[in-house]
Length: 241
Image (tube, rainbow, N blue to C red):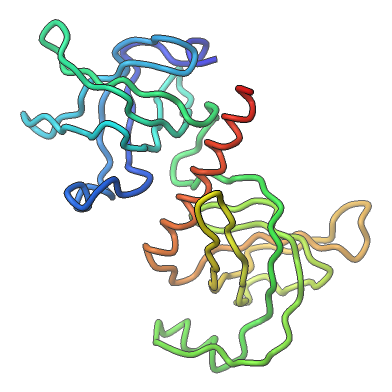
């Protein structure tokens, strides 16, 4: 699969999926450019060690990265882990192993992960809306009824969910859901803006909504991206048997 779409010399960008250690903390948000050095197998490749000006960036072994490939006028994306690094023929090389499948990727969009997560939601009340719009600190009004729904895909930028409640496009809603992985159970409480709402074809009374996160902190976004990475890695292990 890898050799069908990616060739040696292909330009790539790498960004850390999660912080490997405190020493690497300051580099967690950086995007590094490099290129594919060689394809080893259908899930492993050699890439050139990235550089900044004339300085080599020694990315750590076991570091996990989101990689975007520039190939044949199409962008591709996968998650990968660095499994080795060494010098060969005066070139500094990283060996990376894919931990998700290769997918087409569109710039300026977060990767959307298909799922089935239970969620509870409600429209924000007027005081909450004002606070969100003015980016002020506020407390959610307790005790208001929540409607159950199902998230069908999620990303670092938003989500898509199904509900028998139709929310007005442009409105703000409170969303509560849990990201359950092998390692942890993370509760997410976020505010989202309804981008679209439409009745599902052949499912009268069921509405599909697209939501964009509003005023989300970097920490909460990292939790979602980390969850997606771990689920992708688990799915790949399952496919490999």
